[in-house]
Length: 269
Picture 1: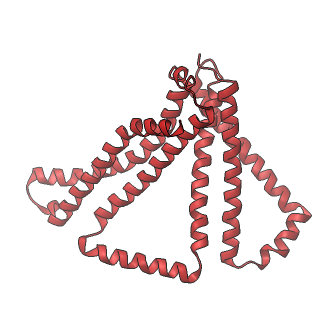
Picture 2: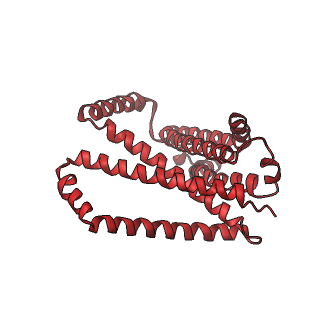
Picture 3: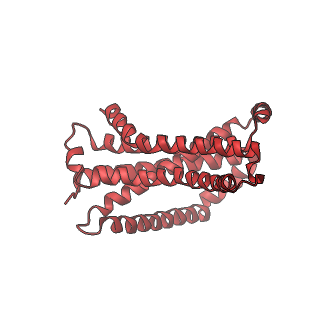
């Protein structure tokens, strides 16, 4: 059933993202053409206006790609699960956990694709055809250097850290909306308040825990006996590993609380 949820979710959101990606790439190619033909120095007023407006349009589309990802993250979860559409969604023969997973997986995929498309569009503007070979040559050399220096572990940990951080952020927003829907009025406003309050509570807990560990004999002994002997690369790896564990734990708590509220405390009135 999760596959069917993902299928319909991709279809619904693809109607927004795919045309936006297409428009971004088309405008990027047009701007690249204008740069190659040096249209900005042409005396024709119409072409001059067109050449000057395309970069602005490209910037707007570039921002729109990321803003749309954020809006769709909120809109799909809130509209499908916390409004009148929720009466239909929660009658499907599927668990609440799978409903949450479907929203999370789809928006995560679109965020990744949005980043890839934005980078690709920028490369179209910056790189000329003669630069492509040089670009891949430099990229290959970078991979070789990373391999020789043994930084692949750090690179993988960094990617995992970014994923865990983004997932934690998405789930915290889902939890905030789930808390906000408990109110009978002004649910969106309550969701914003819940998000702010949630972040304040979490940050205070993490700060208190960090201070407590650092001030404890165990924390001091660990810092002096273990961390002090690590190289910079090893210390960086330990830091990323600790952050990944932290964000995974936070994501698990956010997910469990969201599932509990949507299962036991759902308020669609």
